[in-house]
Length: 420
Image (cartoon, rainbow, N blue to C red):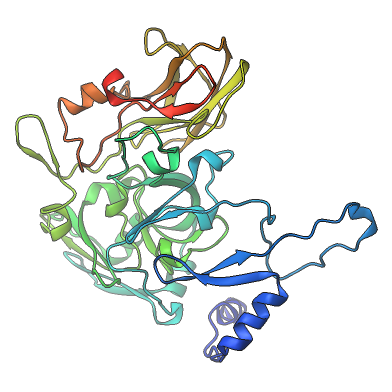
């Protein structure tokens, strides 16, 4: 017990002294590191690298000594694509299926709050036998569980012009390894009453984000997570703790979670009435459409790349909130015929799955595309098929096949939706 307390006290010190840094000192320090500090379009200060010194013979020059944090090579220019309320993951620049934490997509409604982990509390009340409040230390004392799964914003779709990258089309999905406590464990602690069927999850951000969640999801695979990819959550991902609902739309997975209320009906909050519902063909509204349907995206070749005549490895990722991806099919002839791609093991449930397909391009113009099939038998639909039943303009849960047009000069462009 004393040993545990000592470790936790080290993680969360009682006092963090404020450090006063003048503008001159900050800029001077940046110059010493070969960096320039400039404001971005949203007023944030970002680092802009100065010209890189590269020795002709690295064996004749001492290298950089070890530092407190690892950094990317200055030649790697990976970055998210920010807007005022979101930033998108550069899917076309990543390898494998795990998204680096600093490149995980971001979506918020009231900005990212600054939270002290020592003051954090999660309250669970309502239709329970024993209302309880859990600190972060309390959560970490419960048996921990780690799993890999994706999170995707339900509004993850863009089209309309040929000059769009995978990041711009569907970069509001990312995948991490998450660690935390099963929500069912906490519910057993408080004693959920048998009449209960829903719970409200509430965030501690300026928007006070709230969503109603069916209780059965809590007992299936829901978690309260406090770690991502081996370290504490990033602030934009809900530090110090968030709700994780594998396979469900991102908006339900409340970040900076502070309160859970158990009830016997949904709460009909702002975010599940006026928002996060979608129009369907008969003019009605589809509500509580939590699960993310199967989807895939070819990340290579994609805009703005140019390919050479000959062998090309088509590659990308596929995912489904319903479970495992069992097949990804590739068409290199505008959808006339389809062939199975190779899936990269391990194929995990509710997770990004990498795929690849070897294709010999003959130099003629064509259209290539992929479609995902999950373990329920669901087949990713074409744009035309999906548009006949769901609203595409600003709608949610829009997961059509994405096609790339390859010109005779090898340039790659997003294909017009009319061809699908």
